[in-house]
Image 1 (cartoon, rainbow, N blue to C red):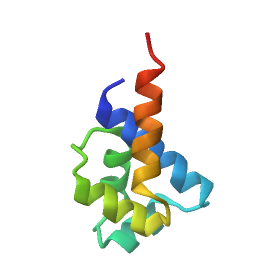
Image 2: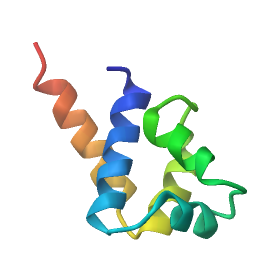
Image 3: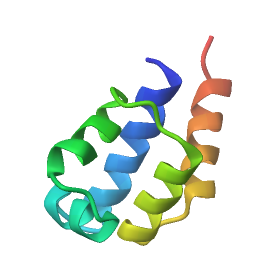
Image 4: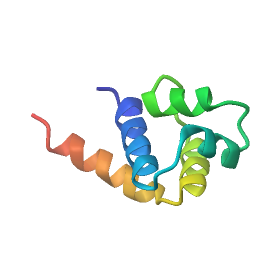
Length: 78
């Protein structure tokens, strides 16, 4: 799993914890469609710091927590 995919997975996890849809997140981020959110969560779109921060603001989670989880996951491998 790539770094983008791991970050996207954690983003999606936070969205689901907050019981939000991709449409709701897209609206809060000012995106035109939920497809943009889907691509971020799948790690298809390169996730910038700005994207991560905007996503977390929309969902109501901490981007630092996401990066820590991704970092912890990576350090536990192999």
